[in-house]
Amino acid sequence: MPKYIFITGGVVSSLGKGIASASIGKMIEAKGLKVAMQKLDPYINVDPGTMNPYQHGEVYVTEDGAETDLDLGHYERFTASSIGRLNNVTTGQLYYSVIAKERRGDYLGATVQVVPHITDEITERIREVSKGRRVDVVIVEVGGTVGDIESLPFLEAIRQFRLEVGRDNVINIHLTLVPFIRAAGELKTKPTQHSVGRLREIGIQPDILLCRTEKKLAKGLKDKIALFCNVESDAVIEARDVQTIYEVPLIFQEQGLDKVICRFLRLDYKVGSLSEWKKNVVEVSLHPKHMIRIAVVGKYIELQDAYKSIYEALKHGGIANNAGVIFKKIDAEKLEHGRPEKFLKDCDGVLVPGGFGTRGVEGKIKAIQYCRENRVPYFGICLGMQCAVIEFARNILGMKGANSTEFNKKTSYPVISLLEEQQNVTQMGGTMRLGAYPCILKKGANAAKAYRAEKVSERHRHRYEFNNKFQDLFEKAGMKVTGVYPQGDLVEIVEIEDHPWFLAVQFHPEFSSKPDQAHPLFREFIRSALSYRDHRLEGAVLPEAGAEALRPVSEIEVA
Image (tube, rainbow, N blue to C red; front, side, top):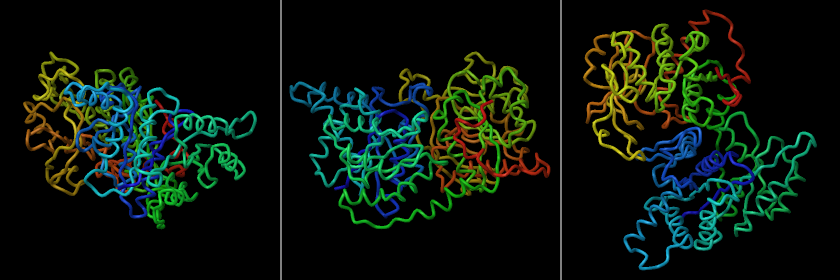
């Protein structure tokens, strides 16, 4: 039977439970143990697929086609854990399942209640994530903040779970906040005490506390927290602010968190080295040899989490090229009413990510035209590919008014159109083309050179496709189809042949990129951007690589 780690959060949201969970998984894997990761989400939506990015952030898509919480992206980036639809559980899924069972008569006339029926469903989902495969430790992150009504069934379930499997097989880790009050010049422990108190009222005594703080916690302060929260002193761990999230496993290991976990779970302690991670990921992130500026032209640009995997994959491409990436985040709507060179002239590459709806599309098209005409490295993803096709049709093929039927159903040139399988779809949730599909690459193209393969598999999330009726016209004019889904002859990748690096894909390569294993297309996009930068600067002296690249994306330029 595997051991279990439950991670909860208190005081405020957005403390970084997902990164903390992933970092703990990384530490445990370094000891040669197998890890499974899971996220329990309290919202009643079945999945985040129909949520507005401004409310939920990015929707992360797994290999098996599940639309999940963005924290699963952290799990995949940090660990080798296999992530799929079993790894994200929502209140909506639980009630959907329990009600279906009730309608079938599975409960034999019993009154269906939160306890035990919903809580039993939760514990069954927790067990399922490791069923049928070797797993040493299951790490379960409980979404929300202690005190939320929505989280109560999950907390009750994990309270019961510890009783079922034995106290030596489960530990509870609580992530909390120790704020620094500048006016008083002090760190305050009271929010942590109250948060732990709320958790204990529910029946859960945390074994370990992760204390988010911007200042170092003195030993006396740790001892105070340990005393008032009824935990051991060495189980009070600083979760300090860092320059890059990839430092977090190192910070935890330095404080002996892995030893404490092994002690509580009765695991043999083996020293696990994170030296390769430190050398190849963290040190390169903090001290890059080169610096480049990449424009991300999007419609949800104000919210950092809306393009979380995009930003991380660009950083990975930078790491692979020993380069720091400065993000210039550009609101596509502003581009609609301005000259693109005003926004893009100081950029070494441009990426247009995915999205839905007409807002900002014309701005994205203007950015793409600028890249094509000025030979700026361009990388389009999902909607970014569709916009590249529309731009080429209008300005090279002379198809005035060319568009996607998503934006204009009556366009004379529907170069992007609804998938045939989507024609009669009426339900919105979970009905897009989702998950991994194979792609055959054209030999000699930039995509094939990047992948160094003839066939790859990538994840999708879309309803609209390149319209094959126009493919010959595009090919003759210089936009080549260099990747195809063989079963449906669907266009997956397009490139412009006389451009240094103009590549757009229908799928989402950002979901399969890791800091120590950058996705090939992001790696080569950054490589091309570095080459373009050298040409653009024409021998000018670059500023020293420094803090500009290390500031959080939310603080970096927003055009």
